[in-house]
Length: 462
Image 1 (cartoon, rainbow, N blue to C red):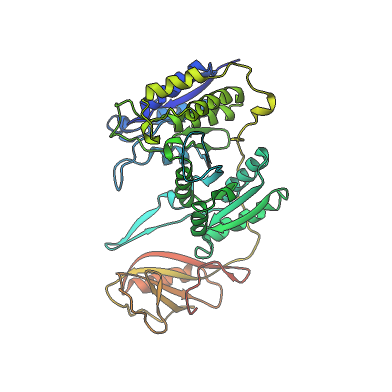
Image 2 (spheres, rainbow, N blue to C red):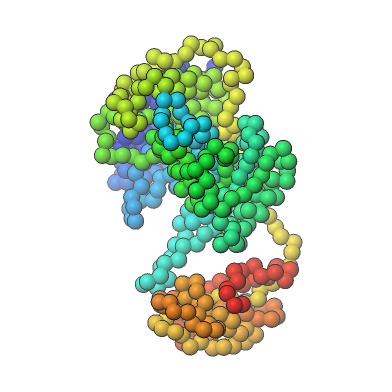
């Protein structure tokens, strides 16, 4: 059997220790992998000015597969997240996060077997943020139809391949009616193509409550990036924590498997880190590479060691990283121990994204929201050209027309101007020129209708 070359990013903190443990287990299991080590993490910042040099990305592109240890992400400053940079640079649009009860790992729940599929590129993780005024920051939540369709179809294809029964869409479309609404519409559209699967949806807040009361009711869950980040960690907590949680980032023809827990610099070098999460991610990688017999041997050994009660201290045990690694190696079952029926893959697979959607419906410009900086209630023109003032809001709360609510005003106001007839860019330019005579405008959003339906959020009283 020809070896497959895999890019290895050991990361920082405990990353090198748990990576070495996985390499030792793979060698003992005679997994047909050749490792090509590349740099990532804190060690790269001084040398390259960022945590992920271009050479590392090129290695992953060339090999089309990587295993990644944890890397440190600074909070509120410093270099960009290595994880997010890899996902976006390589278009790894589906983040697969299984959460399954492990033998010997005592938690509040038994028989948990949930797979969360998280959109991996868009949402607020686009990182599009701006200071609008000294007191106001704006963060854009970007949801696209092609991005949503790609990850949703992946979830349904994965569920089908694994013989799963149910796919649940997690969203907040009752509040984010357009962004989450688009994601939910895409889910419902794709679900029609898979009548053999039960398809339903649930609000994110209710999903969290249900997961911590009755997690066994869920099967496959699909959600957007931010919700998925939170819910995947919650699911990990149901089965023992991030120290045992595997993850795969899947793109069109490439994938990166990783431990999603932190780099734990406080215990780095002490020899007590738990390699389970990275090891389970590595077995997912073996399934992805269509090497299920090697994956099964390693999984069987890991489960045997945990069932015997040998655990690292994060799981309530006393085993060192070395003790745990050696125990797994000694527990490896002999080759040929599995029936063909036992080698079913968890279906971590490639998936081709949807083509960009082009609407053939009428798209008409009807107005604009202009955001201005001003202290106190602004006096703005009631009419400019074809447009009339229909709304002033502050922090999303309508303060004009009608009774002004008793709220604290920040120095950032939204002025909504609308017309009863179609507008052109010239009309918008005229509006901005008039606003600029009295105020500093910070941002503008055009308002459109599609076939007479407003494609912008309604404000109370409109």
